[in-house]
Image 1 (spheres, rainbow, N blue to C red):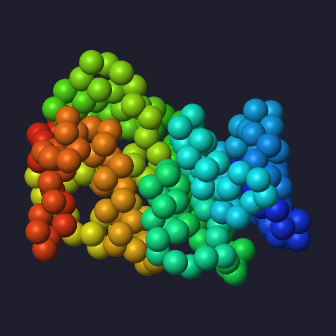
Image 2: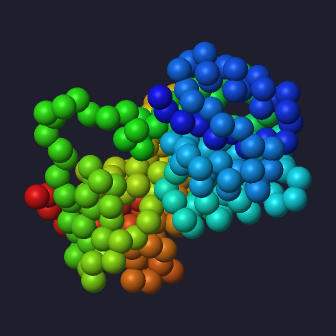
Length: 236
């Protein structure tokens, strides 16, 4: 069973979501604040965290940043605020997806499933050949193990969104990809992600793989076009 950790100070929402996800064969832990969240993570690491922005004490945005600094657990942020700037801040801090209250539980379920597919939580069938290691400019990405290693062999942690975006670039090197194409390739067609979310993920990825993120060479911005991954990619 896939494990969810739902962090929200609204006990009614916690009760309803726990019941809903248990009915859909998930193992669910709930936490009303940050301290309980950390205790739950330490006791039984979840596969996905559903994290409310507005919490008593430490905010969900601050908790998101700290979780992301330590782990690659997929994070879906919940907020009662629909402002674009709030969603951008959440993505900048490492959230993988965002959902505005009120929402239908079925939509949240779809988001969780999509994140887990992209995170590889649904295991490949036994005997299926593993995907190769992709190399570029001295970097190595093991797609099966989800490990990115720098030219000096240091492992660089990636959020789920950063990993998905890098895989897309590696699968389409030296091609211009529009923001709409990147959204479709990373989130699936029909997802309501907004253009700025791709810009945020590109910015985060650049800070991790570019020698100078302010003068990017590996991921170039194409005016009125989108982005292009310029490096030669090899697979082994």
